Image (cartoon, rainbow, N blue to C red):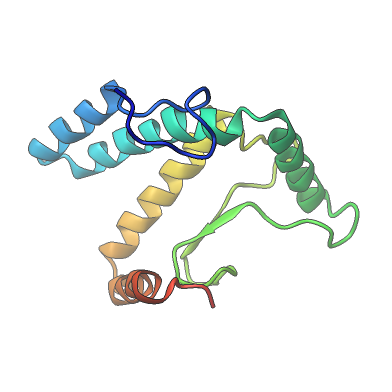
Length: 153
């Protein structure tokens, strides 16, 4: 019934569940609404996979909030890293529109699905905008680098 196993265990994350967001995503694809399908798949990933697998963990919540507050306030100085997504093969931020940050609110909480979804959807929109800009070749090259070499530079 649930043939896929994952280290977090079946008690945390069940596989083979018919989640509504998946059906909605494929219906949107078939209707030609790609952006809406991305939103449905992102909600599915965040709500049904990542939330129970990691973001419900109190220890991770504490670490994420502490890191973010420390980064935003710079207390202690230089001890924390920004919460950001870089749409490139590098692990470090780039200054050309491909880095999306979580924001500067010191009490923001990445473990909160509503706050995280705003961040995820902002990143998805930026990715789509870049694909329809003069930076498309850069994005495609980054995807190739990630696919063929792991992408870490």
